[in-house]
Image: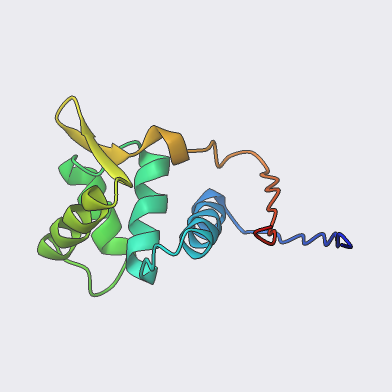
Length: 116
């Protein structure tokens, strides 16, 4: 069986858009079916460290029109069930297993294989 190698390169304007792209790919590869707003909240939370702080929530709401406190609470609940968000020391944060330093460039190696 032949192996095909493709290289894709994409430039993102800042760490938030890089994080959003990463979590979009993670969602697609793992069939998580995250919405755009959920991906935005995960990316924002990963960069900010947690979403429990009132100032952080207020900043997210101001950046994403149509979002409210109750909307954030609903998303948090859903993402906790999927183990994307965890509660640690009283703060809701992204599971450390899927947090990267989005200030750096990221190389992702994806292998799609036949089940043989």
